[in-house]
Image (cartoon, rainbow, N blue to C red):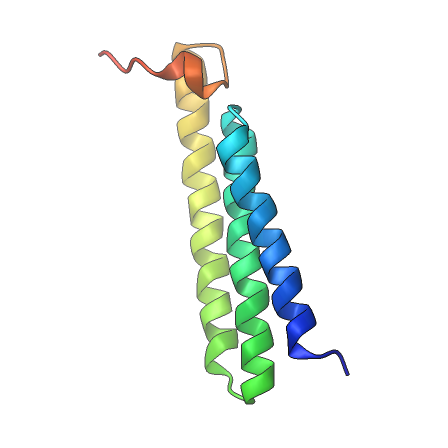
Length: 100
């Protein structure tokens, strides 16, 4: 059986990769993917604690996080498409003025 520490280490590594990707990249699509990595890092730790504590509440919370992540991805991609129609770029630095 795999110890809890290994799951928590994997969760921390995935979450850290997500934070680094979000802070260092300026491409808005990569930033959304990095947010998904951060959510998946949290999901890994919730599943590990749920299994370790023999409680299903953590697994139920993971399903809610997955649903929120799917909605966030759909709304985020719709916003990216709307922004791309106005300015044909996906770099955040070039989208900074939002004048109407």
